[in-house]
View: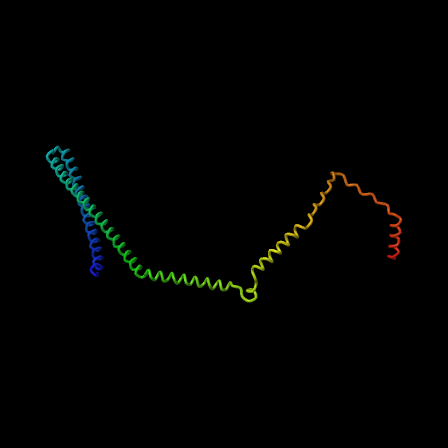
Length: 218
């Protein structure tokens, strides 16, 4: 177990060291490629000068050296391609290893939590919750039960009395006479006022009654 624990950091360090080494080699090959490209370009310029000087033999030698440089450049390009391929494979393997380690750590954590949470403990906890819920329900029912004088009331008797009151109310509503609608107001044409009622003449008895009331008032 300790070997596995202490071996993982060392393995990761070796992977990083290998990647660094490959990266350094790649940079060195790129520098050599640039140098060879400059040398090949220089040979081309020399060949042009010898051609202008009518020195065909020297110009051909320059072109031969240019070809050799180009072959080396092509070889360096293949080396760089192989190193790139190796780096990609190594980085992919590193990512795979890290993923597997992460999954293994998650599985171990899940297993530890399952051990800490026993199914019997879960069942016991649920039983306790159900028991407490039932006790609380009984307490609420006990509190809602009427006590004292209210406990002696007969619910059926109260219901019958309520029905009698409702029946009496309905009967009273049915016996009430229907109310007559108020008379519609008389429409008077615009500009015309309704004629005033002519004063009625009082009878002799009414005159005597009025005179008597006047004397009593004095």
